[in-house]
Length: 501
Image 1 (cartoon, rainbow, N blue to C red):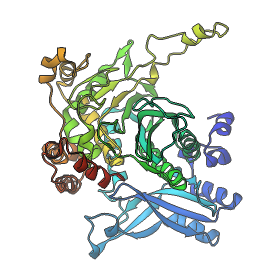
Image 2: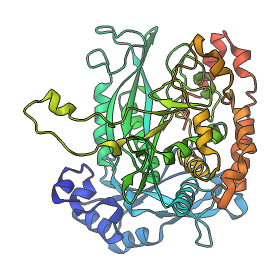
Image 3: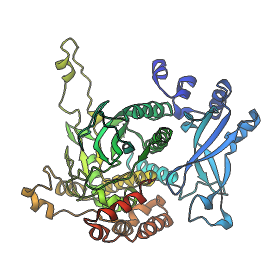
Image 4: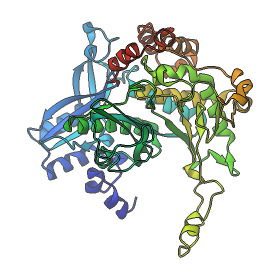
Protein backbone atom coordinates (compact mmCIF):
# COMPACT_ATOMS: atom_id res chain seq x y z
CA UNK A 1 0.00 0.00 0.00
CA UNK A 2 1.17 3.51 -0.78
CA UNK A 3 1.10 6.53 1.51
CA UNK A 4 -1.96 7.75 -0.38
CA UNK A 5 -3.69 4.41 0.24
CA UNK A 6 -3.24 4.82 3.99
CA UNK A 7 -4.59 8.38 3.83
CA UNK A 8 -7.69 7.29 1.90
CA UNK A 9 -8.41 4.19 4.01
CA UNK A 10 -11.32 5.11 6.34
CA UNK A 11 -10.11 2.67 9.03
CA UNK A 12 -8.80 4.96 11.77
CA UNK A 13 -6.11 2.51 12.90
CA UNK A 14 -4.80 2.03 9.36
CA UNK A 15 -4.61 5.80 8.90
CA UNK A 16 -2.73 6.28 12.18
CA UNK A 17 -0.37 3.27 12.03
CA UNK A 18 0.19 3.54 8.26
CA UNK A 19 0.11 -0.20 7.76
CA UNK A 20 -2.59 -2.68 6.66
CA UNK A 21 -4.66 -4.28 9.41
CA UNK A 22 -3.17 -7.70 8.61
CA UNK A 23 0.13 -6.41 10.00
CA UNK A 24 -1.20 -5.00 13.30
CA UNK A 25 0.80 -6.09 16.35
CA UNK A 26 0.19 -5.76 20.07
CA UNK A 27 2.68 -2.92 20.18
CA UNK A 28 0.77 -1.12 17.38
CA UNK A 29 -2.48 -1.31 19.31
CA UNK A 30 -0.84 -0.08 22.50
CA UNK A 31 0.65 2.86 20.59
CA UNK A 32 -2.76 3.79 19.15
CA UNK A 33 -4.48 3.42 22.53
CA UNK A 34 -1.96 5.63 24.32
CA UNK A 35 -1.75 8.32 21.63
CA UNK A 36 -5.53 8.52 21.14
CA UNK A 37 -6.55 8.41 24.81
CA UNK A 38 -8.53 5.17 24.49
CA UNK A 39 -10.08 4.30 27.88
CA UNK A 40 -11.67 0.91 27.26
CA UNK A 41 -11.01 -2.38 25.45
CA UNK A 42 -13.98 -4.48 24.30
CA UNK A 43 -13.48 -8.14 23.40
CA UNK A 44 -16.10 -9.23 20.83
CA UNK A 45 -16.85 -12.79 19.76
CA UNK A 46 -19.60 -14.87 18.16
CA UNK A 47 -21.04 -17.84 20.02
CA UNK A 48 -23.70 -20.38 19.10
CA UNK A 49 -26.51 -17.87 18.51
CA UNK A 50 -24.52 -16.00 15.81
CA UNK A 51 -24.63 -12.59 17.54
CA UNK A 52 -21.66 -10.52 18.70
CA UNK A 53 -20.93 -10.83 22.43
CA UNK A 54 -19.02 -8.26 24.49
CA UNK A 55 -16.54 -8.31 27.38
CA UNK A 56 -15.52 -4.83 28.60
CA UNK A 57 -12.18 -3.82 30.15
CA UNK A 58 -11.31 -0.46 31.68
CA UNK A 59 -7.62 0.24 31.04
CA UNK A 60 -5.87 1.00 34.35
CA UNK A 61 -2.28 1.25 33.15
CA UNK A 62 0.28 0.04 30.63
CA UNK A 63 0.94 -3.22 32.48
CA UNK A 64 -2.77 -3.95 32.63
CA UNK A 65 -3.21 -3.13 28.94
CA UNK A 66 -0.24 -5.32 27.99
CA UNK A 67 -1.69 -8.16 30.07
CA UNK A 68 -5.11 -7.94 28.38
CA UNK A 69 -3.59 -8.04 24.91
CA UNK A 70 -1.02 -10.74 25.80
CA UNK A 71 -3.18 -13.33 27.55
CA UNK A 72 -6.79 -12.66 26.61
CA UNK A 73 -9.37 -13.60 29.24
CA UNK A 74 -11.41 -16.59 30.41
CA UNK A 75 -15.17 -16.92 29.90
CA UNK A 76 -17.93 -19.42 30.70
CA UNK A 77 -18.19 -21.58 27.59
CA UNK A 78 -21.33 -23.35 28.82
CA UNK A 79 -23.24 -20.06 28.63
CA UNK A 80 -22.04 -19.49 25.07
CA UNK A 81 -22.34 -23.01 23.56
CA UNK A 82 -25.07 -25.51 24.43
CA UNK A 83 -22.75 -28.48 23.88
CA UNK A 84 -20.19 -27.39 26.51
CA UNK A 85 -21.00 -28.75 29.96
CA UNK A 86 -20.95 -26.65 33.12
CA UNK A 87 -18.60 -29.14 34.82
CA UNK A 88 -15.60 -28.02 32.77
CA UNK A 89 -16.72 -24.97 30.87
CA UNK A 90 -13.93 -22.39 31.02
CA UNK A 91 -12.63 -21.13 27.70
CA UNK A 92 -10.10 -18.47 26.78
CA UNK A 93 -10.97 -15.63 24.41
CA UNK A 94 -7.82 -14.50 22.56
CA UNK A 95 -7.81 -11.19 20.62
CA UNK A 96 -6.98 -11.16 16.91
CA UNK A 97 -5.12 -7.89 16.49
CA UNK A 98 -5.93 -7.41 12.80
CA UNK A 99 -9.64 -7.08 13.64
CA UNK A 100 -9.26 -4.08 15.99
CA UNK A 101 -11.45 -1.03 15.34
CA UNK A 102 -12.58 2.09 17.17
CA UNK A 103 -16.09 1.62 18.56
CA UNK A 104 -18.21 4.28 16.78
CA UNK A 105 -20.99 4.28 19.41
CA UNK A 106 -19.28 4.23 22.79
CA UNK A 107 -19.28 7.54 24.71
CA UNK A 108 -16.11 6.29 26.40
CA UNK A 109 -13.30 6.09 23.76
CA UNK A 110 -13.07 2.34 23.14
CA UNK A 111 -11.20 -0.13 20.97
CA UNK A 112 -13.04 -3.31 19.98
CA UNK A 113 -11.22 -6.51 18.99
CA UNK A 114 -12.68 -9.78 17.68
CA UNK A 115 -11.50 -12.88 19.52
CA UNK A 116 -10.98 -16.62 19.02
CA UNK A 117 -11.92 -19.35 21.50
CA UNK A 118 -9.22 -21.56 23.04
CA UNK A 119 -9.52 -24.54 25.39
CA UNK A 120 -7.94 -25.09 28.82
CA UNK A 121 -5.07 -26.85 27.03
CA UNK A 122 -4.34 -23.75 24.95
CA UNK A 123 -5.71 -25.29 21.74
CA UNK A 124 -8.30 -23.73 19.40
CA UNK A 125 -11.85 -24.82 20.22
CA UNK A 126 -12.54 -27.22 17.33
CA UNK A 127 -16.25 -26.43 17.24
CA UNK A 128 -15.93 -22.64 17.47
CA UNK A 129 -17.55 -21.06 14.38
CA UNK A 130 -14.52 -18.94 13.48
CA UNK A 131 -12.18 -21.94 13.81
CA UNK A 132 -14.34 -24.13 11.57
CA UNK A 133 -13.99 -21.47 8.88
CA UNK A 134 -10.24 -21.21 9.47
CA UNK A 135 -9.88 -24.98 9.07
CA UNK A 136 -11.94 -25.00 5.87
CA UNK A 137 -9.89 -22.18 4.40
CA UNK A 138 -6.60 -23.83 5.37
CA UNK A 139 -7.59 -27.19 3.88
CA UNK A 140 -8.77 -25.53 0.66
CA UNK A 141 -5.45 -23.72 0.14
CA UNK A 142 -3.47 -26.83 1.05
CA UNK A 143 -5.40 -29.08 -1.34
CA UNK A 144 -5.75 -26.69 -4.29
CA UNK A 145 -3.00 -24.09 -4.02
CA UNK A 146 -5.70 -21.46 -4.55
CA UNK A 147 -6.93 -18.58 -2.40
CA UNK A 148 -10.68 -18.37 -1.78
CA UNK A 149 -12.20 -14.90 -1.60
CA UNK A 150 -15.80 -13.89 -0.99
CA UNK A 151 -18.16 -11.07 -0.21
CA UNK A 152 -21.74 -10.83 0.98
CA UNK A 153 -24.81 -8.82 0.04
CA UNK A 154 -26.51 -7.69 3.24
CA UNK A 155 -30.24 -7.16 2.64
CA UNK A 156 -32.52 -5.90 5.40
CA UNK A 157 -35.85 -4.24 6.10
CA UNK A 158 -36.42 -1.17 8.29
CA UNK A 159 -39.82 -0.78 9.91
CA UNK A 160 -40.94 2.62 11.18
CA UNK A 161 -43.86 5.01 11.21
CA UNK A 162 -45.18 5.39 7.68
CA UNK A 163 -44.32 8.57 5.78
CA UNK A 164 -47.00 9.67 3.34
CA UNK A 165 -45.59 12.87 1.83
CA UNK A 166 -43.59 11.03 -0.86
CA UNK A 167 -44.87 7.44 -0.99
CA UNK A 168 -43.01 5.03 -3.27
CA UNK A 169 -44.66 2.42 -5.49
CA UNK A 170 -45.27 -0.85 -3.66
CA UNK A 171 -42.51 -3.42 -4.40
CA UNK A 172 -40.78 -0.96 -6.76
CA UNK A 173 -38.13 0.40 -4.42
CA UNK A 174 -35.06 -0.76 -6.36
CA UNK A 175 -32.49 2.08 -6.25
CA UNK A 176 -35.07 4.62 -5.08
CA UNK A 177 -33.69 7.89 -3.72
CA UNK A 178 -34.78 10.37 -1.12
CA UNK A 179 -37.40 11.66 -0.57
CA UNK A 180 -39.13 8.52 -1.85
CA UNK A 181 -37.01 6.38 0.45
CA UNK A 182 -36.98 7.44 4.09
CA UNK A 183 -33.91 5.58 5.39
CA UNK A 184 -31.22 6.41 2.83
CA UNK A 185 -29.40 8.58 5.38
CA UNK A 186 -29.18 5.72 7.86
CA UNK A 187 -27.78 3.42 5.18
CA UNK A 188 -25.17 5.99 4.20
CA UNK A 189 -24.16 6.55 7.83
CA UNK A 190 -23.91 2.79 8.33
CA UNK A 191 -21.62 2.50 5.31
CA UNK A 192 -19.30 5.20 6.66
CA UNK A 193 -19.09 3.54 10.08
CA UNK A 194 -18.62 0.05 8.64
CA UNK A 195 -15.72 1.34 6.53
CA UNK A 196 -14.19 3.05 9.57
CA UNK A 197 -14.36 -0.31 11.37
CA UNK A 198 -12.48 -2.06 8.55
CA UNK A 199 -15.26 -3.22 6.21
CA UNK A 200 -14.53 -3.06 2.48
CA UNK A 201 -17.76 -1.81 0.92
CA UNK A 202 -18.68 -1.95 -2.76
CA UNK A 203 -21.91 0.06 -2.64
CA UNK A 204 -25.30 0.50 -1.00
CA UNK A 205 -28.80 1.07 -2.36
CA UNK A 206 -32.49 0.69 -1.65
CA UNK A 207 -33.92 -2.67 -2.68
CA UNK A 208 -37.14 -3.81 -4.33
CA UNK A 209 -39.12 -4.38 -1.16
CA UNK A 210 -41.24 -1.57 0.23
CA UNK A 211 -44.80 -1.58 1.49
CA UNK A 212 -47.09 -0.15 4.14
CA UNK A 213 -49.47 -1.76 6.61
CA UNK A 214 -51.66 0.64 8.52
CA UNK A 215 -49.41 3.20 10.19
CA UNK A 216 -46.21 1.22 9.60
CA UNK A 217 -43.86 1.63 6.67
CA UNK A 218 -41.31 -0.98 5.55
CA UNK A 219 -38.25 -0.30 3.39
CA UNK A 220 -35.71 -2.79 2.09
CA UNK A 221 -32.05 -1.80 1.68
CA UNK A 222 -28.81 -3.52 0.72
CA UNK A 223 -25.13 -3.01 1.50
CA UNK A 224 -22.76 -4.99 -0.71
CA UNK A 225 -19.12 -5.63 0.04
CA UNK A 226 -15.92 -6.15 -1.93
CA UNK A 227 -14.30 -9.60 -2.20
CA UNK A 228 -11.78 -10.23 0.57
CA UNK A 229 -10.33 -13.32 2.24
CA UNK A 230 -13.05 -15.60 3.59
CA UNK A 231 -12.56 -14.90 7.29
CA UNK A 232 -12.52 -11.14 6.67
CA UNK A 233 -15.67 -11.44 4.52
CA UNK A 234 -17.59 -13.00 7.40
CA UNK A 235 -16.36 -10.56 10.02
CA UNK A 236 -17.21 -7.47 8.02
CA UNK A 237 -20.77 -8.80 7.70
CA UNK A 238 -21.02 -9.41 11.45
CA UNK A 239 -19.80 -5.91 12.28
CA UNK A 240 -22.08 -4.42 9.60
CA UNK A 241 -25.13 -6.13 11.11
CA UNK A 242 -24.25 -4.77 14.55
CA UNK A 243 -23.75 -1.24 13.21
CA UNK A 244 -27.04 -1.16 11.27
CA UNK A 245 -28.91 -2.48 14.31
CA UNK A 246 -27.32 0.14 16.56
CA UNK A 247 -28.25 2.97 14.20
CA UNK A 248 -31.82 1.72 13.81
CA UNK A 249 -32.20 1.39 17.59
CA UNK A 250 -31.01 4.99 17.98
CA UNK A 251 -33.82 6.09 15.64
CA UNK A 252 -36.46 3.94 17.31
CA UNK A 253 -36.83 1.86 14.14
CA UNK A 254 -36.80 -1.92 13.81
CA UNK A 255 -34.26 -3.51 11.47
CA UNK A 256 -34.58 -7.15 10.45
CA UNK A 257 -32.50 -9.55 8.35
CA UNK A 258 -35.35 -12.09 8.46
CA UNK A 259 -35.88 -13.93 5.16
CA UNK A 260 -39.59 -13.09 5.12
CA UNK A 261 -41.42 -10.40 7.05
CA UNK A 262 -44.86 -10.47 5.45
CA UNK A 263 -46.95 -12.33 2.90
CA UNK A 264 -46.55 -11.70 -0.82
CA UNK A 265 -43.66 -9.21 -0.59
CA UNK A 266 -39.97 -9.52 -1.45
CA UNK A 267 -37.89 -11.41 1.10
CA UNK A 268 -34.31 -10.67 2.13
CA UNK A 269 -31.39 -12.86 1.15
CA UNK A 270 -27.73 -12.99 2.08
CA UNK A 271 -26.19 -13.72 -1.31
CA UNK A 272 -22.51 -14.71 -1.27
CA UNK A 273 -20.18 -13.97 -4.22
CA UNK A 274 -17.02 -16.04 -4.60
CA UNK A 275 -13.82 -16.10 -6.63
CA UNK A 276 -10.50 -17.93 -6.45
CA UNK A 277 -7.02 -16.57 -7.04
CA UNK A 278 -3.72 -18.12 -8.02
CA UNK A 279 -0.59 -16.04 -7.52
CA UNK A 280 -2.81 -13.03 -6.88
CA UNK A 281 -4.81 -13.38 -10.12
CA UNK A 282 -8.52 -14.19 -10.34
CA UNK A 283 -8.78 -17.45 -12.32
CA UNK A 284 -12.57 -17.53 -12.70
CA UNK A 285 -12.12 -16.31 -16.27
CA UNK A 286 -10.01 -18.13 -18.86
CA UNK A 287 -9.78 -17.12 -22.52
CA UNK A 288 -12.70 -14.77 -22.07
CA UNK A 289 -15.02 -17.44 -20.63
CA UNK A 290 -15.89 -18.88 -17.24
CA UNK A 291 -12.98 -21.17 -16.37
CA UNK A 292 -13.12 -24.90 -15.70
CA UNK A 293 -11.99 -24.14 -12.16
CA UNK A 294 -15.05 -21.99 -11.55
CA UNK A 295 -17.35 -24.53 -13.22
CA UNK A 296 -16.00 -27.34 -11.05
CA UNK A 297 -16.54 -25.31 -7.91
CA UNK A 298 -20.09 -24.51 -9.00
CA UNK A 299 -20.68 -28.24 -9.52
CA UNK A 300 -19.51 -28.88 -5.97
CA UNK A 301 -21.95 -26.30 -4.66
CA UNK A 302 -24.72 -27.89 -6.75
CA UNK A 303 -23.94 -31.29 -5.21
CA UNK A 304 -24.02 -29.96 -1.63
CA UNK A 305 -26.63 -27.23 -2.05
CA UNK A 306 -29.31 -29.00 -0.02
CA UNK A 307 -26.90 -29.53 2.86
CA UNK A 308 -25.69 -25.92 2.69
CA UNK A 309 -29.19 -24.72 3.60
CA UNK A 310 -28.51 -26.17 7.07
CA UNK A 311 -26.00 -23.34 7.59
CA UNK A 312 -27.59 -20.64 5.45
CA UNK A 313 -31.35 -21.05 5.95
CA UNK A 314 -31.82 -21.92 9.58
CA UNK A 315 -35.37 -20.91 10.58
CA UNK A 316 -38.84 -21.90 9.32
CA UNK A 317 -39.42 -18.55 7.59
CA UNK A 318 -36.35 -19.24 5.42
CA UNK A 319 -38.58 -21.56 3.42
CA UNK A 320 -41.32 -18.98 2.98
CA UNK A 321 -38.75 -17.06 0.93
CA UNK A 322 -37.52 -20.01 -1.14
CA UNK A 323 -40.60 -20.25 -3.34
CA UNK A 324 -41.00 -19.90 -7.14
CA UNK A 325 -41.41 -16.53 -8.89
CA UNK A 326 -39.85 -14.48 -6.03
CA UNK A 327 -36.29 -14.15 -7.45
CA UNK A 328 -35.25 -16.76 -4.88
CA UNK A 329 -33.92 -20.20 -5.91
CA UNK A 330 -35.89 -23.38 -5.38
CA UNK A 331 -34.22 -25.82 -7.80
CA UNK A 332 -30.61 -26.97 -8.19
CA UNK A 333 -29.22 -25.30 -11.30
CA UNK A 334 -26.94 -22.43 -12.30
CA UNK A 335 -26.65 -19.92 -15.12
CA UNK A 336 -25.29 -16.65 -16.44
CA UNK A 337 -27.09 -13.48 -15.32
CA UNK A 338 -30.09 -15.64 -14.41
CA UNK A 339 -31.96 -14.76 -11.21
CA UNK A 340 -34.10 -17.90 -11.18
CA UNK A 341 -31.12 -20.16 -10.46
CA UNK A 342 -29.22 -21.28 -7.38
CA UNK A 343 -25.78 -20.08 -8.52
CA UNK A 344 -25.67 -17.06 -10.80
CA UNK A 345 -22.67 -15.87 -12.80
CA UNK A 346 -23.28 -12.11 -12.81
CA UNK A 347 -22.35 -9.72 -15.56
CA UNK A 348 -18.58 -9.29 -15.64
CA UNK A 349 -16.21 -7.00 -17.48
CA UNK A 350 -15.36 -9.58 -20.15
CA UNK A 351 -15.38 -8.25 -23.69
CA UNK A 352 -16.93 -4.96 -22.55
CA UNK A 353 -14.15 -2.44 -23.04
CA UNK A 354 -13.78 1.30 -23.62
CA UNK A 355 -17.27 2.08 -22.31
CA UNK A 356 -15.85 4.93 -20.24
CA UNK A 357 -14.19 6.41 -23.33
CA UNK A 358 -17.41 6.03 -25.30
CA UNK A 359 -19.29 8.03 -22.67
CA UNK A 360 -16.37 10.45 -22.14
CA UNK A 361 -14.67 11.03 -25.53
CA UNK A 362 -12.08 13.29 -23.88
CA UNK A 363 -10.80 10.33 -21.81
CA UNK A 364 -7.89 8.19 -23.03
CA UNK A 365 -8.62 4.52 -23.65
CA UNK A 366 -7.85 2.27 -20.67
CA UNK A 367 -5.89 -0.87 -21.70
CA UNK A 368 -6.32 -2.68 -18.37
CA UNK A 369 -8.07 -6.05 -18.10
CA UNK A 370 -10.96 -5.83 -15.62
CA UNK A 371 -12.10 -9.45 -15.98
CA UNK A 372 -10.52 -10.04 -12.55
CA UNK A 373 -13.76 -8.65 -11.08
CA UNK A 374 -15.71 -11.76 -12.15
CA UNK A 375 -17.44 -13.73 -9.38
CA UNK A 376 -20.10 -16.42 -9.06
CA UNK A 377 -22.97 -15.95 -6.62
CA UNK A 378 -24.71 -18.39 -4.26
CA UNK A 379 -28.26 -17.01 -3.97
CA UNK A 380 -29.81 -19.38 -1.42
CA UNK A 381 -28.80 -18.07 2.06
CA UNK A 382 -30.63 -15.46 4.11
CA UNK A 383 -30.08 -13.40 7.24
CA UNK A 384 -30.65 -16.39 9.54
CA UNK A 385 -27.36 -17.89 8.34
CA UNK A 386 -24.56 -18.86 10.70
CA UNK A 387 -22.17 -16.89 8.51
CA UNK A 388 -19.00 -18.62 9.72
CA UNK A 389 -20.42 -22.09 9.08
CA UNK A 390 -22.01 -21.03 5.79
CA UNK A 391 -18.73 -19.67 4.45
CA UNK A 392 -16.88 -22.77 5.65
CA UNK A 393 -19.50 -24.93 3.94
CA UNK A 394 -19.10 -23.05 0.66
CA UNK A 395 -15.32 -23.52 0.80
CA UNK A 396 -15.79 -27.24 1.46
CA UNK A 397 -18.24 -27.42 -1.46
CA UNK A 398 -15.80 -25.61 -3.75
CA UNK A 399 -13.01 -28.02 -2.85
CA UNK A 400 -15.42 -30.94 -3.29
CA UNK A 401 -16.19 -29.77 -6.81
CA UNK A 402 -12.52 -29.40 -7.72
CA UNK A 403 -11.90 -32.98 -6.57
CA UNK A 404 -14.96 -34.68 -8.13
CA UNK A 405 -14.13 -36.63 -11.30
CA UNK A 406 -17.38 -35.73 -13.08
CA UNK A 407 -17.76 -32.14 -11.92
CA UNK A 408 -17.57 -30.57 -15.40
CA UNK A 409 -20.30 -32.90 -16.63
CA UNK A 410 -22.47 -32.04 -13.63
CA UNK A 411 -21.96 -28.35 -14.36
CA UNK A 412 -22.96 -28.85 -17.99
CA UNK A 413 -26.05 -30.88 -17.08
CA UNK A 414 -27.29 -28.34 -14.53
CA UNK A 415 -26.72 -25.21 -16.61
CA UNK A 416 -29.87 -23.17 -17.24
CA UNK A 417 -29.92 -20.29 -19.73
CA UNK A 418 -33.69 -19.72 -19.44
CA UNK A 419 -36.22 -18.74 -16.79
CA UNK A 420 -36.85 -22.23 -15.47
CA UNK A 421 -40.31 -21.23 -14.22
CA UNK A 422 -41.55 -20.13 -17.64
CA UNK A 423 -44.25 -22.49 -18.99
CA UNK A 424 -42.22 -23.26 -22.11
CA UNK A 425 -39.43 -24.83 -20.04
CA UNK A 426 -41.45 -27.14 -17.79
CA UNK A 427 -39.56 -30.16 -19.18
CA UNK A 428 -36.28 -28.62 -18.02
CA UNK A 429 -37.72 -27.87 -14.58
CA UNK A 430 -39.02 -31.42 -14.12
CA UNK A 431 -35.47 -32.78 -14.45
CA UNK A 432 -34.04 -30.59 -11.67
CA UNK A 433 -33.65 -31.49 -8.03
CA UNK A 434 -35.58 -29.30 -5.60
CA UNK A 435 -34.02 -27.56 -2.60
CA UNK A 436 -35.30 -28.46 0.87
CA UNK A 437 -38.70 -26.97 1.67
CA UNK A 438 -38.25 -26.82 5.46
CA UNK A 439 -35.66 -27.02 8.22
CA UNK A 440 -36.47 -30.71 8.75
CA UNK A 441 -35.53 -31.58 5.15
CA UNK A 442 -32.46 -29.33 5.41
CA UNK A 443 -31.23 -31.38 8.37
CA UNK A 444 -31.75 -34.61 6.43
CA UNK A 445 -29.69 -33.24 3.52
CA UNK A 446 -26.87 -32.27 5.89
CA UNK A 447 -26.80 -35.68 7.54
CA UNK A 448 -26.74 -37.37 4.14
CA UNK A 449 -23.65 -35.39 3.07
CA UNK A 450 -21.99 -35.08 6.48
CA UNK A 451 -18.86 -37.06 5.59
CA UNK A 452 -17.81 -34.42 3.06
CA UNK A 453 -18.07 -31.65 5.65
CA UNK A 454 -16.33 -33.73 8.32
CA UNK A 455 -13.43 -34.66 6.05
CA UNK A 456 -10.04 -33.55 7.46
CA UNK A 457 -11.78 -32.52 10.67
CA UNK A 458 -13.15 -29.28 9.22
CA UNK A 459 -16.62 -29.70 10.76
CA UNK A 460 -16.55 -31.72 14.00
CA UNK A 461 -19.05 -34.57 14.16
CA UNK A 462 -20.67 -32.95 17.19
CA UNK A 463 -21.23 -29.73 15.24
CA UNK A 464 -23.04 -31.53 12.43
CA UNK A 465 -25.14 -33.42 15.00
CA UNK A 466 -25.98 -30.18 16.82
CA UNK A 467 -26.93 -28.27 13.65
CA UNK A 468 -29.18 -31.10 12.46
CA UNK A 469 -30.76 -31.52 15.91
CA UNK A 470 -31.57 -27.80 16.19
CA UNK A 471 -33.16 -27.78 12.73
CA UNK A 472 -35.27 -30.83 13.58
CA UNK A 473 -36.53 -29.16 16.78
CA UNK A 474 -38.66 -26.80 14.66
CA UNK A 475 -40.76 -29.79 13.55
CA UNK A 476 -41.68 -27.81 10.45
CA UNK A 477 -41.98 -30.73 8.04
CA UNK A 478 -44.94 -29.85 5.80
CA UNK A 479 -45.36 -26.44 7.46
CA UNK A 480 -45.81 -24.54 4.19
CA UNK A 481 -48.75 -26.74 3.23
CA UNK A 482 -50.33 -26.41 6.69
CA UNK A 483 -50.27 -22.60 6.67
CA UNK A 484 -50.96 -22.02 2.97
CA UNK A 485 -53.42 -19.15 2.65
CA UNK A 486 -53.64 -18.65 6.43
CA UNK A 487 -52.25 -15.13 6.75
CA UNK A 488 -52.65 -14.99 10.55
CA UNK A 489 -50.66 -18.19 11.01
CA UNK A 490 -47.96 -17.02 8.60
CA UNK A 491 -47.58 -13.67 10.38
CA UNK A 492 -47.41 -15.43 13.75
CA UNK A 493 -44.37 -17.37 12.50
CA UNK A 494 -42.87 -14.29 10.82
CA UNK A 495 -43.12 -12.26 14.05
CA UNK A 496 -41.55 -15.08 16.06
CA UNK A 497 -38.38 -15.06 13.95
CA UNK A 498 -38.17 -11.34 13.09
CA UNK A 499 -34.86 -11.02 15.01
CA UNK A 500 -32.72 -13.76 13.46
CA UNK A 501 -28.94 -13.94 14.06
